[in-house]
Image (cartoon, rainbow, N blue to C red; front, side, top):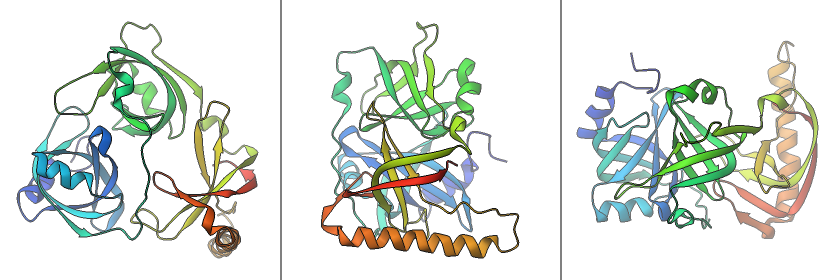
Length: 301
């Protein structure tokens, strides 16, 4: 069985990396910071997956990686590195087997030069993803994703966090040649992590949300387009709330009702979107209609 941190046996990944190639989808790219992430899914099991960091073996591969797009399907050959709690692949060869239909013309506004000449930094941002059982944290700060290594004494606390939790972190910066910056909770601080706003505390709470209408096209992650409202708080932190029907699934007709209501929500959103389509701009992995403000009432899930 794979470890609790990793989803797949090492041999399964290595056999494909050294053979015909490991096929997956690009999860995200921040070329300015040399960050490339591949999602590998178990064939036939959508919910069994692992994110693997990609490391170019030379300048030519680095150039190829920088030209890829989110959701592109690729085949990768290379060497699996078992470093820490986030596995990396040193890429020797990568081929696009199926380009994604949509390409986001999104320019990252911030880069690692923000941390030049610093050894410690205080970060106010939100959780992007957890690694393993709290051994690592991907943190959204400004326009970046920061990989944070979590020491054992804080892993239980981190494991209970959710995506979009807002945190205040005191971090030390780890610099190594030819790789993006990594971070670690600052051991010199008695309380290096503070939870400012917890998504779990909002669960099942009635709310009225206001913000811009955004659209996620169908992709390898979602089988149909999904609309959402983007709420920006007074600190500039953005949270996207997808619009889904509030249906009691204990009722016998729940699935039918859910589909009917989701279709109605999507159609109403799509009609408004198409009326103002000239106002659409690209987000990092979605589209924003800057001319459509929506008010949504319901329960946060």
